[in-house]
Length: 502
Image (cartoon, rainbow, N blue to C red):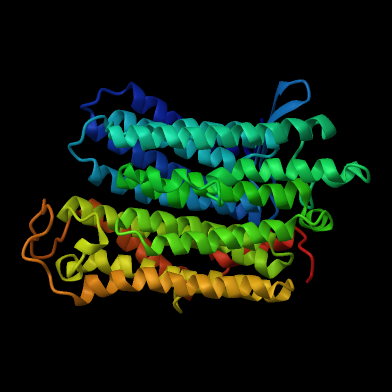
């Protein structure tokens, strides 16, 4: 085995081995468990740094292992995979720091951090899958590894949410498997290749391929929370704040959106998908989801539920970018995969801080919280402004490329949907900022667990991650033209996917 073949395996092993060791540790070993978590996250980032340089220079990182005759497990670290892997690993480190502070003194930390590491392993496997079989394997492993995190609190409400989560995701997995098996029956092994792999079937299979496309998109659309497959996501907000951050910014919904990318770009290919008239219906579903999620967010008083409906809307920006037939829309969708993750993890970190420090769970309880927790609220404000698409934020960059991509693709109606969504973003985020900064503080907070010290509004490990991610919201916009920015990497992927010129 060469070094280039080994590196994708090492990328998986850095979190998998850590998770397995954590399961074997005594519950009381908090110090060693923390050290192992952080060391594994840092090792993964070091591996990623080397592979990013290699992929940019055209290096190939592919591992293949025959499972059965004609069925291979393939890990392929291409440019698209590295975009998702880098996001996952970077936010994993921040979420690990946050979870250590959030769960301090809590029970069942061994179980939490063990499954937390398996969740990251599954996400990296989804990102680096080189064929449909490998993608399906890790996609379902992600379902199984996130379920214990959703039900971690063990309450009746969390167990019910976990059951709903499993019902949706396992049903979606069954639909996805049907499409995978059907396509394997036609093609044999289905590798992810630039330009797509199904066009070799030629004429006579168009109707079959349209049905297979529908099955594959429906299967991944459950995790991507496309309407009407989104019902599990708001209910999953009973999970602890680090899990909510993981679900929305790093793992589950992103795995679904990433699956849409692989199906459109590298199973069907955008040109062939367009010739089968599949992209416009996908864009319409994305637009419906964008507006529906935003409208539902307006009526939520529970802060995490409002953020959950916002996620339903914002993740479909990625799907819309995929469905727009042209490189500019593709770039917008690709870069929003990263930008939405940074913005949404910031918002969920801050929501967790409000709950853990002051017992605030509802927007109606947030009056004056900006004066009590100014740094947390500043980070929340950056996340909210980014979601609105304010200049000098990550959201502005994404929406600019998506809007321009809609015009160039001859779909001005999609541009109007983006404008409508931005107006709705303002309508459901601006009142929160008004309450937080301009309204008078109450005499007592719902449940103040940490009296404010001179320079410390909450525990350091709860404050540092949202400050870093909040600053990144501005950083990725200001440095958008830098050679290693998410936007530049999205442009590289678009070039390598041989996107059509219009």
